Length: 293
Image (cartoon, rainbow, N blue to C red; front, side):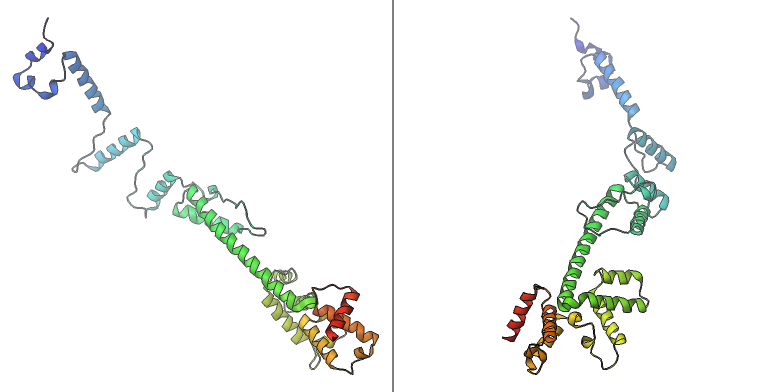
């Protein structure tokens, strides 16, 4: 039987002892290995050396992208509008600003809304800097959550201030609001401001200021507004209580003689001083007795 390595005897001596041939026990296997190597070389991509020209470098890039289409090139400079636009587009930036999705919060507070012009402006800015759709959505979600939180806090603070004003003004609240709105109208205030005043969504400090203006411009000099024919219903709790104290301190007042008109006035004053209490006549009479004891 012929030795399987006889084929190596036909090679020059310097090749016969080459280590790379020791793994081949037949010329068939050597031939097969050679064919596979040539096929691999045909599919391989040679990286241009440092002496290669621009043309060879571009051919290398084209061939690389042909075999790996998911690869993307890093632009020479992101300051170049054309190069950076293509780069961001590859990452997921849309072709048009309108393609950005503007998400809404799942628990969006009542009355809270991002203005349409703000939405359009944010989309335009995002498109100019090359934001991806995913980046824009995340950014807007976080921004909207922060704005919604500030909105909720401001509404809560405003309500707290209004509660304080209503407590201060008591039964006089509606009358004083009307006076403040009337003077604001006369001064040419915007309709939106006047509506906000009536709806109790305007800052109470501004409402109080407008009421003070109404009192200053609408009351003749030397006339006390609480003595006008409108009666004590326009008094704040503090003002009504002050009048109650005056009546009890003045022993010559008709109330102490059981005068019906004076008693009626006292009942009105008690109601104004205690706007949160029951308005039942018997309850009010009990309050009058309590004040007098």
